[in-house]
Structure formats: C-alpha cells, structure tokens
Image 1 (cartoon, rainbow, N blue to C red):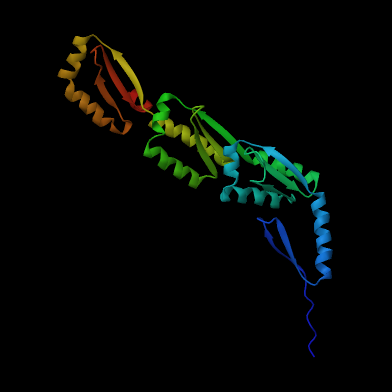
Image 2: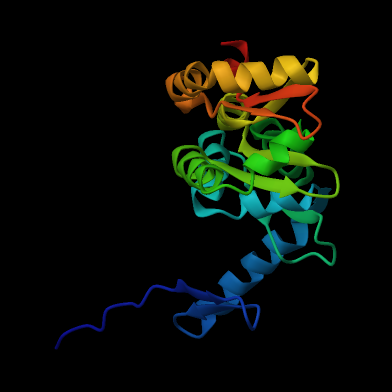
Length: 239
C-alpha cells in the first residue's frame, strides 16, 4: 500500500483587491504559518515619504521600480516601496520588517532618485510645441530611466528618475534647447540704408540664409524700415 505523501504548506497568491494572503496545506500547519505571518506583520514599520508627484509617477515606471527593487535585494534591505496606498498624491509608503530596515530603505530611495528642473525662456517654450521636441523626449525616456514633464505655471522642464540618468538627460536637454531655440537680434539702420541692403544685396542675403539653413536663419526688414531683424539659433546668429 502506498503511503500518502505529506503535503507541505505553501503561501498562495496575494489578492490585492481583497487585501488577503492565501495559505494552502494541512489544517494544522496553515494555522502555524498564519501565526508566524501575523508575528512578522506586527513588527513591520511603515513610514510615509513625501516626494513631488512627478517623481512618484516615475518611480512607478517598471524600468525604474525594477532598479529600486534590485538595490534593496543587493543590499539585503528587507523592505518594499508601496505606491497608491496613501491619501496624499505626494506620498509613498516605505514598509520594512523593522525600523532599521525602513530607515535604510528610505535612505536608499532618496539617494537613488533625483529631480532637476530647467528654467525656460519665452523662446524656449516655442521649441516645446514642435514635433522635434516630442521625438527628442521619446528618445530620452527610452534611453534613460527618467520622466520629462513640462511645468507650465513655473515655466520649467522637470527631469526625474534614477540620479545618474537624470544628470545625463539633463545635459542633453540643455544642448537640445541651445541648438533649437530661435533667437532674434535687430540691427538698427536708417530707412534708406535698410532698403539699399535688401534691394542691392538681396541675392547675398538669400545665399546667407541658404548656407545657414540648418541654423534656421532668417533675415527680414522691419515694418518701419529702421531695423533689420535676424533670427535663428544661437549658432546661426553668431555666424
């Protein structure tokens, strides 16, 4: 006669909707396991951490949350970060098996993430409406573990995510804005000189505009004929 194999208890799935953890096994053993689970839960320390909303949204991104989880594992910190469980949109919860684990997890989180902002000028904001900017942002967020948000009320672009990637992305955004922002300069002249330039040197002006096409250079006379308006990128104006 075959002897019945002893069935070992195991933890079943966690149902987040009902906030339940299923235990499966012989009647007596799950009760013992349940007691151990309650003992662990009773020691858990929960600490809310206040962060900007854009940072929390980035922390939820799979490619970012996987980094923070791996770091906790590498450093043997017995804690987790919980999102969408706080009454405030600016908070996340840090749960550790004891106070020391919770403190270490919070320190790890704050040292791993970064949030930097770039103050925009009126000229910069025009660039942000372009398809070129949208394509640039898509490239950055696929290349780096970051999120890029335009804060219209404060006229800033905010970059948040893993600190190392934030710094790299931040530098590339600065370079992008410098290369694509259209600036204007005016050259004061009397009306006769202005008309002379645009009539006699029209072909030369067109040659200049064509040579500096990649710098978005344009040259126009103002309506009062007292100035010449030159527009283009910073590099284009210099040339």
